[in-house]
View (cartoon, rainbow, N blue to C red):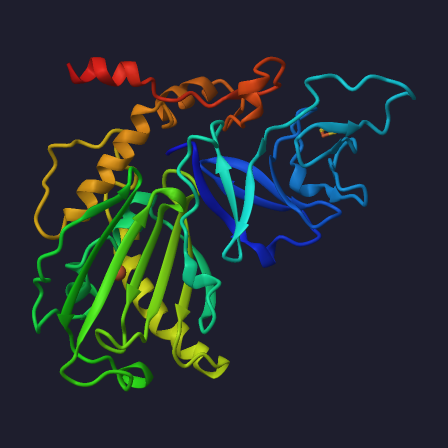
Length: 379
Ligand code: FES
Ligand SMILES: [Fe+2]
């Protein structure tokens, strides 16, 4: 799993007056809002004696109070008060927990899990989300599948006819499509093709023989996939967008968070239909992702593994993007982590404060794969 990536941690509406526990990258975090309503994300493990901060309470001074001895932590992770300490007592430097950069975008709380936010790829730009004339719906669920399998469930055009019965020109082979890099960590591809007209409400939006345009983008940030379909036929401007974001809970489970946007039938009465037709696809993908083996993929996948065209065009570049991120030293070394915790202990995802002030932390940071060792292994 990878650090220095922005992940979606929750829908904003689910972070309210109570602290909220979230598991990401196999570690525990707490989300809470301060007295101004600003969302924060801290490591959930109290630096004093390891109590879970999500069991504490949000205070009127904007801090989060630990459930065991009441130490208060600000959004920056620093302890501001130790209620049982004598008046004038100094707060030790180590009385702090890791605090991670947070941004709220598209109705979601995004958290940068890492220590180099200035070098991490930015949160994807989705201009349609705030544009007039669009209606957006939210949905989330946890899958018993590792994040690669979960992501691959929609990272090609070939599975669509096979899994979702969406034939291209009446068959399985999609038209030629090239994968372009938008920047170092995001990809784009697209097709224009005749498909069977959809059933029900949406089918009526398109003439029988017209073509549809489908554009697919992948962003490392949030492990976000954007599928943009001109559902009313090419040139109609009638569009549906599905955004799916994948956050690894650990190596075996993934939180799938979805946004469905449409610029047609924007009244609420059509929402149920939108959710229903998308859930059908999502659950067709889920069954496969949850059954795929191995449950946990190798930390460094074998680059010689079978790559077919056209179904692996995008997946191939996905692996290249992850390899580049790994080469920056940002992939968690899970073998070293397992070894380090074999006899106990807890390790945290390093936060930006560890770079400016590396000493005096109660918990060590998770080990990450040293790029130099990768270079040696490749020789
Ligand atoms: S364990 Fe959190 S204040 Fe003591
Ligand atoms: Fe799919």
